[in-house]
Amino acid sequence: MSNYHIKNFPEYFHEYRKSVRNPELFWEEIAEEHFLWRKKWDNVLSWDFAKPEVKWFEGSKLNITENCIDRHLFTKGDKTAILFEPNDPKEPATHISYKELHARVNQMANVLKSKGIKKGDRVCIYLPMIPELAVSLLACARIGAIHSVVFAGFSANALATRINDSDCKMVLTSDGSYRGVKTIDLKGIVDEALESCSTVESVLVVKRIQSEINMKDGRDFWLEPLLAGASTDCEPEIMDAEDPLFILYTSGSTGKPKGMVHSTAGYMVYTAYTFKNVFQYRDSDVYWCTADIGWITGHSYIVYGPLANGATTVMFEGVPSYPDFGRFWEIVEKHKINQFYTAPTAIRALAKEGVQHVEQHDLSSIKVLGTVGEPINEEAWHWYDDNVGKKKAPIVDTWWQTETGGILITPIPFCTPTKPTYATLPFLGIQPALMDENGQEIKGNQAEGRLCIKFPWPSMARTIWGNHQRYKDTYFSAFENKYFTGDGALRDEVGYYRITGRVDDVIIVSGHNMGTAPIEDAINEHPAVAESAIVGFPHEVKGNALYGYVTLKETGESRNHDNLRKEINQMITEQIGPIAKLDKIQFTAGLPKTRSGKIMRRILRKIASNDTSNLGDTSTLLNPEVVQDIMDNVL
Ligand code: WTA
Image (cartoon, rainbow, N blue to C red; front, side):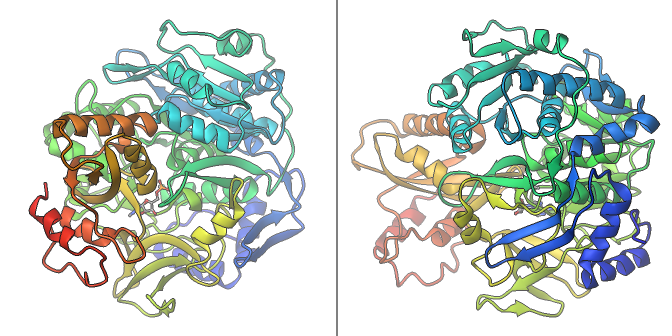
């Protein structure tokens, strides 16, 4: 029998050994005992990383919403499934029970059906953190439609790219969103995006901020009256294990964003099992992950993982700084949060404001603290441990990716002794490897290399929407027969992993993945710009910030450079969104290039980080003279 709930360190080792020696048996037992299947699988796993092709629980039939909602109705119908905390602390929180969630998801599913959405159709969801967001993911899953959530901070352009990439038939949005004291005109952004999208037939609009918006006849519909007239019964569509559940876009180092495709059964099993163990969730606990559902963390650890365990999961609409920097801790106290999961950038931002905000609140309910999204520095780790966890709540530093679907390297609280800045040990079933520059695996402890995973796990992404070749090239070509993460890592003397950061041109800013190519493309559209290169540099709060080197077409460009800087950031905001804005922009006479014309970002990165003692080999440069010039004018 498999052990669904790991409670101590020996148990972890025992189960880990089982999970590696016989992965099929290990996952089969977990799947069999803890989920609802309409039909059992014929085969637990088939895989070939050369193709690449991975299939889990093939032949089985299920619907993930039956697992996340229906099966809890009998035992937990009145338990709060979603606890919604609005932006404005004066607006009361809402408790949505499993029974209510069931009714609301079914109503929404019926509305989608009435607008012609069927199994396999793609539905774009561009909503703020309000209950309708979670409900719409589940409504899609109920009828087998594939959801593609786009974070509601992306620009019209970025939204249009994502809608078009997967030919979405519908967009779900709201009249607008609250963000602290500000409101954002989401519907206006959708309208602008749809000017360049031909596949969208209907737009369903949630009323949230009561603003005056444009409704296009025959295309746009208010959701509320449709929901009110919809039945609360909706038979779940019975899905195959490998049917896509959703697409979620993530930035790559080159080209347009990658639509990572996640499957149904494997994703469900892995997110549920990791949620239970990584947060040591118990039935009466209230769990809060502060991420936005627009990112993978929200998909897996606000919606699917918690609900599959019948948990109470909090959705917070606002920001940590509104009405003041004590908001997170006020919410923890108010709802007696037991597990709190956030990003290092939020911890650093709050630490900067002083401990008084924390001290004003009773945080004694907290049992487990989590972090995700970027490496956590030692100072932030200790601040979190001392002031939030009061040295009593273990910190789980969880490493994973949009592509991995669920947490892969993490401590298990009360089992794994933690170590600041270390994600520690692989989760059950995960087989990491560190690779050297020659493509060889580095065995033994005390090693540093590129982080790969040697064996499939149930929630890994199956492909990139519409571009399987790119999936293969990006993740399965750098090292034979291994999934390459794009991260570097080191392994200490006891085998603990520490993630050192990206080894490609993805830069993590405030926990968000930023690809350099789309930002450079946006800048290059400015009429005065000849070319540009973006690199990251260390930033106290954001982890990394963006540094842009920009070469102008005419060196004697007469415009004031500060204006140009503003215009460039404006272009980036329009093309991608404010999260991709540059902190520093240096105008340069040229960019260092290799003889084959490739920009040497390594050098630019070092200059931007003030680390110029050893620039490495510059002899292969076509134009070594620009390096000195760039160094002399660094910002
Ligand atoms: C980084 C977020 C260090 C890493 C779930 C990864 C981390 C990228 C950690 C994926 C961590 C995530 N420690 N680095 N605990 N967690 N990362 O796709 O570089 O938004 O490759 O998924 O974030 O970001 P994504």
